[in-house]
Each structure stands twice: as C-alpha cells, then as structure tokens.
Image (tube, rainbow, N blue to C red):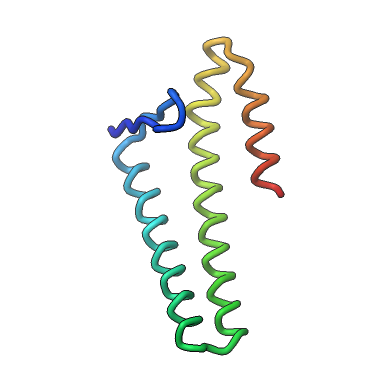
Length: 101
C-alpha cells in the first residue's frame, strides 16, 4: 500500500498497489498523449489531426477521473459515512460540481 501526504492539506489516501499502478499508468499515457499533441503543433500538423488527438487525451483524462471518483466513493466516502462524518457528502457534491463544469 502507498500513502502519500498532500503538501496542501492534512488529508491522505492509502492506495493499494494495484490502484496506485493503474492510476499512474493512466497518467503516464495521458502525459504521453499531451507530449504527442505538443509535437504535432510544433511540426505544424493539420488542425483536425491535432483536434482528434486532443479529443483522445481529453477522453483518457475523463476516464482517469471516473476511475478515481469511483475509488473515492467506494473507499473514502463510504468509510467517512460509516464513521458518522456526513460532511463528506457535501464535499462529494462540490467535487462533482467541479467535474461537471
């Protein structure tokens, strides 16, 4: 399990090795896609080709968000509710609002 401390807050999340690897692999692929898009712009690729790749990167990031949100609800939110911390529901509502902009 990996536990990382956020430099901006006191909350942390313990992630199993499989979850951690999955998230990191997804982010690495997205990072590669973004580098590829940048290279396309640098070499003057045709706009629709760049847009197609940007759309793919956006879909990959949305998929990452869905996986992370699902894991968050199944672990953090569920555990907080079981412990009587109903404030986590408002936090979740706010988070969903940010994702749906």
